[in-house]
Image 1 (cartoon, rainbow, N blue to C red):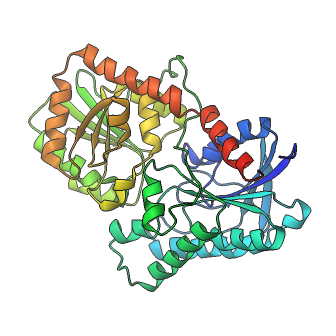
Image 2 (cartoon, rainbow, N blue to C red):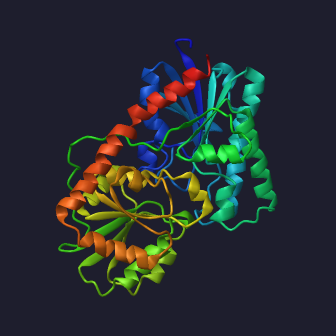
Image 3 (cartoon, rainbow, N blue to C red):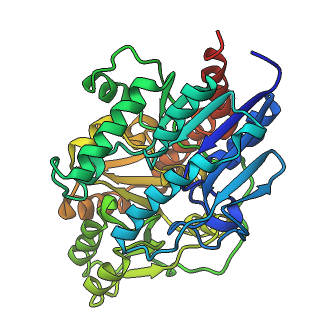
Length: 406
């Protein structure tokens, strides 16, 4: 491999910490290590996203912002409301079409890395591969179009689903290497007709994993309660309705309190459904450093999934890492055989989409000795340090990138 490779990363929802408060920061953190390994990193992202808290200042179709280790190129996009799924979908097409005007002639990419979601930039990456003989790496975060079919209820015969299926297969065919955050994604490649496609599992990561205590913040969780919290997006995929139903089951257990931290399209609905409950609190999305301090106040953390076939290929939500970093035991409601909680032995797993099982799991954890909860938390912390910090993930990516030039 030449000493300096131009690495073009395309992810419509990639972000910087000052804009997103934790969402989409994967390539910002990876860029530090990739830069030190000799890669010239340019990340292309949308200037507007419903996942952002603040937005970059754009002055034209493309606006560049230099970080210490990478250049971010922001693509100007129309704004939309998070609950407006039509405009959210149109924005995916807008981003993909505008990519064809990127001034890549000034710095021809040696490698283009497309990270979903969305799949549509695969079309641009395929063109780059044809026009400039660029190597192409495809990173799958969510499996589309399977996700909108199983989670969103779309018909497999919907024209958009059929088109996305075509783009998905094109990506698998044209990519020189496929990466996924999902540990079982190789099975999906095989089922899709690509059993011999080079594949590497590179999970979601976290920017640090050390022994320093989180910054102290105002106590937001109730005193003298067994506090279980969820921190993350409140959307269709997160199955939070069962968490609220569990709160209703536990309403007479005055020592138990549930807290939900974050925003999302279903937050208002859940707030309405739980308005009669005194054992549930909703908090807004917070900065990463503040989130660590709030998680530190909790006894147990929660994550839930629907009992859908799509999760047979595994999951890699960032909230697992946030919880493990603070050495917290985790209650996972899932039917996933390779759930990180099971792999790391850092908590309790109960069936997916089962409010009674979630409530029983909370009470089981409440009745555990404190040292048992601490042991679970430490198991997760060690797993995080050994497998999912960004320097470890960057080394895995370096192996993938170097393999393209052998």
